[in-house]
Amino acid sequence: QQPVQSPQAVILREGEDAVINCSSSKALYSVHWYRQKHGEAPVFLMILLKGGEQKGHDKISASFNEKKQQSSLYLTASQLSYSGTYFCGTGENTGNQFYFGTGTSLTVIP
Amino acid sequence: EAQVTQNPRYLITVTGKKLTVTCSQNMNHEYMSWYRQDPGLGLRQIYYSMNVEVTDKGDVPEGYKVSRKEKRNFPLILESPSPNQTSLYFCASSFTSTGSAKHFGDGTRLSIL
Image (cartoon, rainbow over all chains, first blue to last red; front, side, top):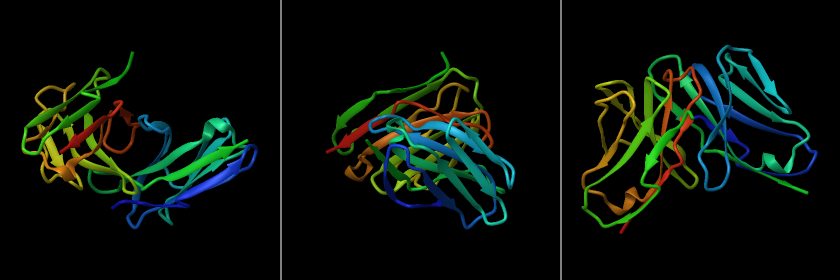
């Protein structure tokens, strides 16, 4: 089942923070986050495998609420290089299919 | 260098002319999959493969075929392409189906006239 992402688009000034949400109607085994720059392939950011897990590197972190079947990506003190489309991807507790959300376009302006 | 290689990068063709998009990975990954990306729809899974000779349908398999005769290769076949298959296609590989990072090829932009 394709997860739902919100917001669809966000524009930030450098240094501002953003949160992107991802929710599924199915019980989840894993949540992935990817960033795609225009004209390029998606690039892996991080994976969360346990309910309640939080991860991060640099100023990008994520949380996974297994009970609510939700994940959030946090971008802190955004930089111009953070611009792109962010996708969450979900693996469900049953089956081997993997689903991507419809994406969130993030634009950071000076 | 660890990579997923797709060919061709761009292809313009006509309705009904069979085509194959190749995908090869050098990371010994078990799981490989094909996605199509259309504006507003995100990435939708076409087919996936858990291992050699094991393939299964994703969300949008109609009009596509795949095969997995070797672990490293996972070609996508359009036997009779139609204009609604015009899209950006990505091949991806990973160690497991849902528990490990996916590595993507550079994409194939396919236009069917």
